[in-house]
Amino acid sequence: MERRTQGKDQRHSNRDRYPSNSAMARSQPVKPQASFFAPKKKKRLIRPDSEEDDESESGSDSKDDDDFKQSTKKLKIPVKNTSKPVIKKDKNPFAVVTVATTTIDNDMDDFRSPPRLVMTPKLNLPKKNVNSINLEKQTILKSLHASKKQESNNKDKVKCPYCSEILFPMRTSISKALEAIELKDKNHREAEMKLMDKEDEFNMIKTRYISAAEKDEFCQLHYKELVVKPDGFVKGYPAKIDFNLIPQRISKFRKELEDIISDVIQSDYRNIADDAYKEQGVTQARSTMSIIQRFHWSLPGYYGPKGSAIIIQALSDMYLKTGYIKDHLVSQQLPLEFIQQVLVPETGLRLIRQDLIKKSTIPPSNCTSKAKQIMIDSCDYGSIVFPLDQSHID
Image 1 (tube, rainbow, N blue to C red):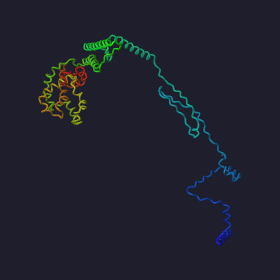
Image 2 (tube, rainbow, N blue to C red):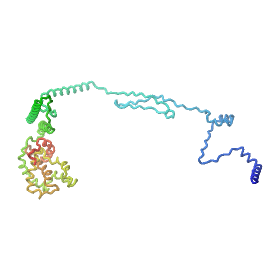
Image 3 (cartoon, rainbow, N blue to C red):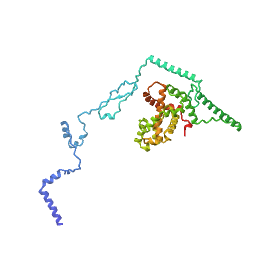
């Protein structure tokens, strides 16, 4: 207790010694110490002198309401956009019309409704000349009259029962094929009628079933007779070939063919096969896909598949069965493969060249290049006109 009383007495004595400090402590408020996270004090804006005088008269109480007083400066209200939209005219009558509008750089513009735009596109169509319209009408009328005439002329003509093509001019082979089709249809109808009489019931007569192979056979026949053969006749391709004389004609080229086998005479068809072996390798070059890709080079032109089979048979008798090609062949190809891909086109080239020399007075030097071109162009003609017979398939 004595210690406590001594402490109180000492405090009172200190207040009496320093009265100025105690009075200052009571009169002035304690300022808080600035910290790192304390918010920064906003700077006060300086206003004109007239406002400061009013503030001094109003006293300290009006300082808090200073921010809500009106300033002497007038606010600038943005002017409403009254400009009309500008429509760009385009020369192209079918082009899309583009509209350009003026923009105002102001914050208040975002809160106002945009000006109403009225799209008024105009099509400036070119003026047509009366003479051009009359010419167009005349051409259309002429085409209509021509089509009507053609239809009236084709009414009496026979049409293909499968593809509806007009069979004119009628060939003997086509007429015979049509008669065979009509006979089959007649026999089928008679057989259906007999079945109805036996059953004593009313049934619909069933039409005869026609296979796709039968349809293709007849359509290919009239396409060959009416399209391919006339076109080949214009180009000078033979309509008939004596295939029995081909082995005798090949024997005249024996020396040249032997030089090709031993690689004494250069051959374009041999180079094609050798390039395939170098690029693809032996196994890939002998595959079915690779042989099919080179197949069109081995066709003997307008002699067709039938002539190709006869040429292979004749060359096999000359070189394969005798064993000549095994002893003298200089190539990676097999003997039969070499005959099919090299010797057959070389023989076909010489046969076509021989036909050209007989027909015309062209010198033999120019006939070789022409025979190569004919052999390429006449492959389709030969495959349709001279197809492979069953007798030549071994």
